[in-house]
Image 1 (cartoon, helix red, strand yellow):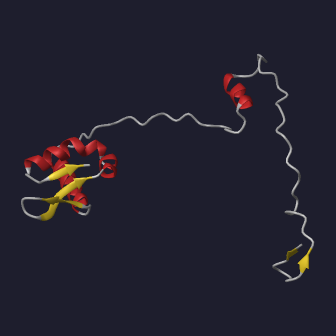
Image 2 (cartoon, helix red, strand yellow):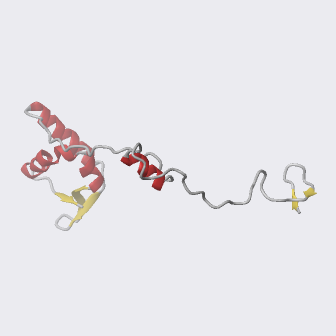
Length: 130
């Protein structure tokens, strides 16, 4: 017995609507040594729960090819983005002035990190990589 939330009456309850007793999983009737089946089809028969899993190519790392004014503008843009991030404590000045390059920032701007680190060192901007 349970209370029906819609009507407010107590009614006989026999489980969820449309519920059926669980049945054991049935074995596949296809033969795995069939010559017509490809390797991926055999894999799907053996592991039906995984379904189709596409094989994606790994993205290639492409380094930055910026030169001249583009390189300077890119470094300034990255510096402005990095200044918005959290900062580390500087013992000498007693303030939070050291810029922190987080793993998220490093991944997002991986192709520019080589020349950006060089830019930070040349400008004597304190930074730490976490």
